[in-house]
Image (cartoon, rainbow, N blue to C red; front, side, top):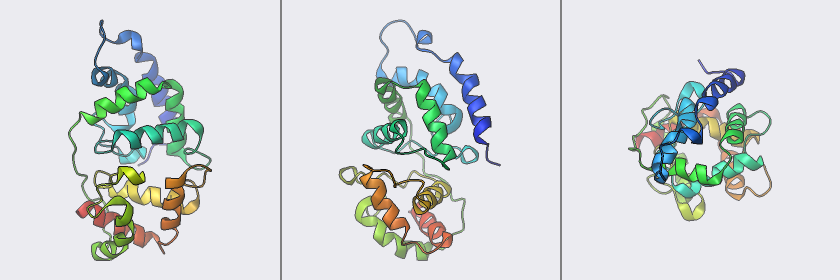
Length: 212
């Protein structure tokens, strides 16, 4: 069962007062150590090892590049992501009201980059062979093994759960993501999502990616 936005906001409110920079160890901590302390807030949704949590619509963070994660945080802050209808994105915007400094974001990212990468388990029963054919369109940006391409602002898909890939493709198709001015990578993805004929196609390509 997924958690409603109001419940997640209450969870955040309960956690945030307990986490402050004043609780950090004395002396200048490393970025990763400082990020570990701040990550307590993020971990409430993304999990202690940043592997994500389906019932909170929170994706895995491990396996992504620093530039991609930083760009997405900026997108949330300025409203490129997290608009009307995107409850998960709105929750991220609330969190960034609490963790608003880019230096803190970079510290959290440094901590996430120190965590072990684990491949997600399949949760869908999509047609993998059909997904293989559909993915031929995706590989131009995301790579033959879905490893991503930083030069094209294309994230690593191999570390993302199949359910999350489907959720985001649906957001692109509905215009909840990729419709904001200035979001060129999102606009490209929105155009790709429009070529997928059905949710079945989305499940197929997500199942194929997780099978890689």
